[in-house]
Structures are given as structure tokens and as C-alpha cells.
Image (cartoon, rainbow, N blue to C red; front, top):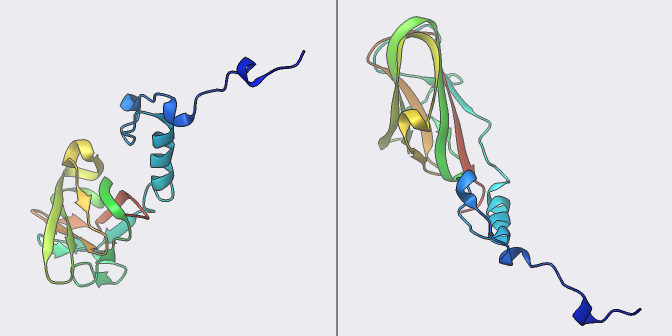
Amino acid sequence: MSLTKHDITLPPHADEVEFDPSNCPEITSDNVQDAIDELCSSAAISASPGFTFNSPGNASTNTWLQVGQVVSNKTGINFPLYNGFLFELSVSNENNNTFDVELYEHDGSTFTLLTTVSIIAQRSNVFDSSDFGIVNITRNLELAAKVVNGSAKNPVVQIIAKGTETP
């Protein structure tokens, strides 16, 4: 028996198949092809390796944390991603101290406060968007962190941000 093209049913193309993005907030498309395209555009870098700020010894109110040996308000960490946003921020210190940490972006002269988190009689805590909301980060601006409203011993602040390599 020989088949003809009328006897074969071809599967639908990916752009004809519905996609329900309700369980995946990173995707907004409603068909499979567009969802794949969205994933491909953001898959190169879905999260930063993490950025770390610290201060050896006691950090009192209004102490800028360091990146390596340099205070982050002088030379911060340059943010390399497009469409960046803060995913997670963790804070630790040697004792059960109470203090706030402010995260800024800056160009060396203009500082913009991105968010503030509070450590209350704790050694450490992890914060995410349920704590600080949506915090966008601008490509090619430097990140800086500062201890305010209290003091910490040997504080360390780590952030994880998400974004893409392309605009």
C-alpha cells in the first residue's frame, strides 16, 4: 500500500501549540515557540555568580562595606547584565547584632538607594523579593553596600542578581 500526502497528518508547529505560563512566571508567552525563544534569550546568564561586600572588624552606622580592599562607595562592583534585578541578598556578621544594610547603585558621584534590609539580633539572614519587592539594577553602574542604624562585627553582604547578556 502506498501513502499519499493526504494520508499523513503532520504535527502542529511549535507556534501553534498553546503554552500555559501560569506555573513559570519568567515566561509570558502563550505558545511553545515564543516560550522557547524567551528561554533562549535569557538562558545565557540567568543569575550572577554573586557579589560580595564586607568590612573587617567593627562596622558602625554609616560604614561603607568593601569590595576587596576598597570601600564600595569609591569603587563598587560594576553590574554587567541587562534587564537586571536583585534576586537575593544575604547578610551575616560575627555576633547577634542589630543593624540595617543599604544597597546602592552609583556612577561614582550619584548614589541611588536600591533597598534596605534589617538584621535584628541575628548573626545572619537571607532576604528575597518577598522582603524587598522588585529591585531593578542598571547595567554599567557600580553596586555598593553600607551598614546603617546600628553596628556589626565583620559583616558580609552577598547579593545574587538576575539579568540577561543582551538587551
